Amino acid sequence: MKAPEDREGTLKLFQEGPALLERVVADLTETQLDAKPAKGGWTIRQIIHHIVDGDDIWKMGIKMALGNTTSEFSLVWYSDLSQESWSERWAYHKRSIDVSLALFKATRAHVLQILENRPDGWTQSVAVRGKKDSRVEHVPIGFVIQMQAEHVVHHIKRIQEILHELNNR
Image (tube, rainbow, N blue to C red):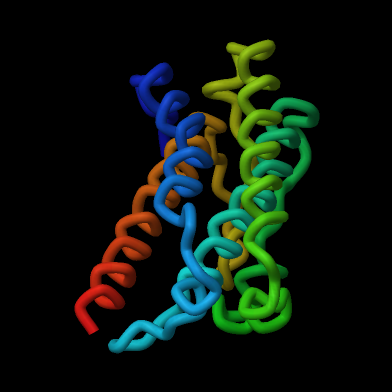
């Protein structure tokens, strides 16, 4: 894994994430947020909480990479359960999106402020103990930023698909 060469472009997309998400869900009704897609999958509400929780989790990995290069960021606890299980355990279907959207905006601003003051951090890595094979992989901060920036774009496309489906029912 490598940090992307287009640092500025990647940071810009990462920074735009909260505004892009807020724009696509602005003025949605509770019914729209909770509508089940015809082919199954998460509701828009559940997708929003998933995006924000992912950013919140990875924020700690970024801070570890900048603060203690010998530490290990383990995601084993998270990968031990399915995404559906986390959705249920963290009550995605019941929670308001307002708090999550505010956390998303704050988390992104927090990470960006750190990176602005630590430009050397882009290529610093965190040791990540991943999925079930328990391998440790060194993941550069820039890679995490790109992954999280693209994660939002991916899910915004899914939200738009759901909204298109709802409008054509």
